[in-house]
Image 1 (cartoon, helix red, strand yellow):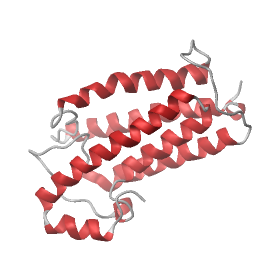
Image 2 (cartoon, one colour):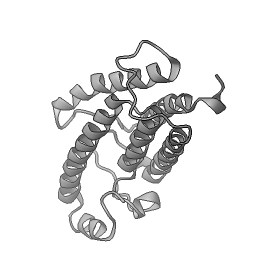
Image 3 (cartoon, rainbow, N blue to C red):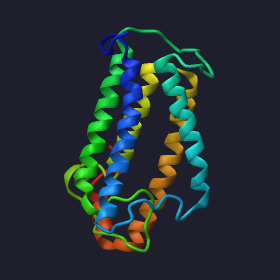
Image 4 (spheres, one colour):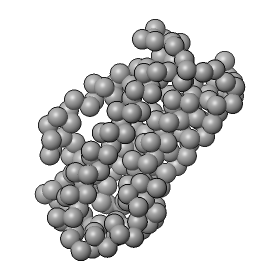
Length: 193
């Protein structure tokens, strides 16, 4: 199969590119003396997420490359819908990259209460207070449309809940840390879209 005939390859590539962007940015910041990776610092239950993320990766890669799969049951078969999913994945990757650029030195994975940076309100953050999470939503929806697997539908619902939970925790931190500046920003700019 060629890339032109198999949108599943793009779905798998999307995951690799997301991970590469996060690790790449984290390593660049580490060289500048900034610890960008603060995952699980506030809530140790966050460490339950990586095994589920690894399983998600396996489901996507199994579907894309015909590995042994947990389930091959599909909701639908279409020639066009998977390519719409590819476009959503590409849009999510683009928004994610723009978010990293807008974040600058303020980028963190998890909440860093000990070393908060400046409040970012420019770039894509002028349109959404959480463009990275919106990007994840585009990617998750895109991958469901590419593979139409019921497991990915469950993951999409679970991710929506986890993302919203994380956003609420971050908003509480931002209100405490930035006060009126954050309140004015949140009055101007929507939480998601």
